Amino acid sequence: ERWLQLQKGRPQTAMTSGSSSEDRLVHPRPETAPASSLTCPPDTLDPLSDAITAAANFNPIYPAVCNGKTFSLAHQVHYKLRLAHVFLQGLGVDQRNITEVRTAQGHYDYAEQTETDRKKLPGLPAVRLRGRLDGAARKSSFVQVSAARVENLVRRMYGEEELRYLLKDWKDFKNYGERAEEALGVEHVSEIFGEEEFEISFDELETLEKRIQIFTGPDLPERFYLHLVGIVSKDSNVQFYFERRAVPLMWLAQSTNPCALGKFIKTLLDKDVPDAEPLWKYYGFSSYQQFLCTITQSLTELSTQVCVACPGYFFVGNHNQIVKKPDNPVLFISATGIDFNAGASARAELSKYFYADLKKFKPGARDSFKARIKRTYHGIFTACQHFGVTHPTAIAMGLGMFLPEIEKEDVMAVYHEAIFEVLCENDYGFNTFFLNPARATPAAKKVLEDNKDKYHFRCKMLLHSKDGKALASELASRGFRTSFLNPSDCIAVMQGCIGYWWACGMGERYAGEEDFAATSTALLARSGIC
Image (cartoon, rainbow, N blue to C red; front, side):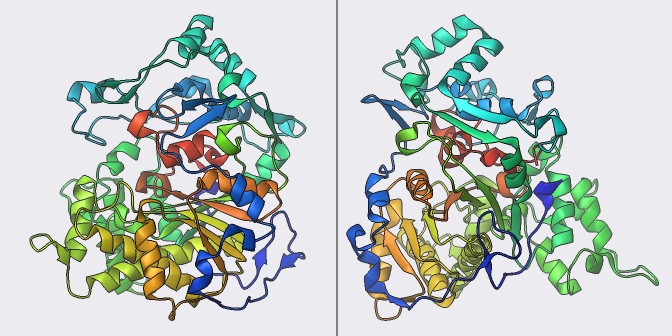
């Protein structure tokens, strides 16, 4: 399966989007830019200024603004009305094989959420297509996404009465126990997403799907990673391994009744194989010690060494209004920060870096924490370089739900120190790097001020408060080679569930990852499609 393909190594030149192997773009090394250039006003970045000015500011309700009315995609617009459902229908999703690869029980245990509430929540649906994207019958056809097609799909699957109810009367809970004040109260989906139509050919979809790449760090050799993901991404295994994502792989092997992944690791641990190459070496490890280092980590820990890169398009532009397909795709990148705030995963990570009783970093832990974050961002930027991105955008990663209660401000600072140091130490061929630090903006500015004589960047940089999706869309529509960073989760980058709860999540289950997948072609990178 192409989702399991891996891109290793850092290329010396960056391929332009859609270029051939003979047409490579080698980025000249720009003059190093001092830290003071980071605060330059947008009007000094022409011709980028109009894109920056046009992009909407970030809003956590993910608003669709049409004809002066605002509708929250997280709270007001029912998940049956999502654009990605139409996209999948156009791809040929197999409606006969809609199964739940895991249930909602036990996940995101909110204080306001009762056990009864959790059992009522829908599970995470599997996705399968009826045929391959490169099928001969599809060569000359197109996939269209529009408000009218959303209506037609809902009408066909659920009936006219259900469509009217969702548009006029249905109300979601903003949060558990807090009822939304108003229903949508509209007659047509076009009053939410506009009248435009997005259209893309199967030829281009096939090309996009074939260009998906996965970049990994040193603890995940290619062959080992492929075999591991082949086990944990199976529909029948997703929930089982997600619930054990904080368990070191070694522990799975030492169980009295080991699971499939445990049996695999146990086989590699066996060094007594006469006259044969050790299996750990076959799976890409340079030494037995390297192998042991990997299997003492859990899926969650290893996930910070994975970067899924997928060229694609947003169906929407500013304010979540459907737009025509721009000429240039956006490089979608899914990567994950360190989870300090979710059950067993958080406890394992916290004990690695912090004294729980003293609520501070252990000696030397701050440096090792930063080194790990730098490795993650180096993987992200290497992916951008490989695809010829010159104007990447990024939003804060690891500083939302993953942020620990211990040393909050310092953790925010470490993340930004890591980003800035990696961009100072390496030339990825970027012209301008756009960063929205969100809640960590004061920390990011302080890091820059404290290191203004130390940091010398290889590109221009702009701190901003714009919506990352909107800014990437504006840049792409103006011909810039840009990217969008999706702060993701272990279940996405290790188990293939790109978009996570996109298909049915509402409220707190409709966050950045879900909005990203529900309004773009990013589901091409989902296990079961590619």
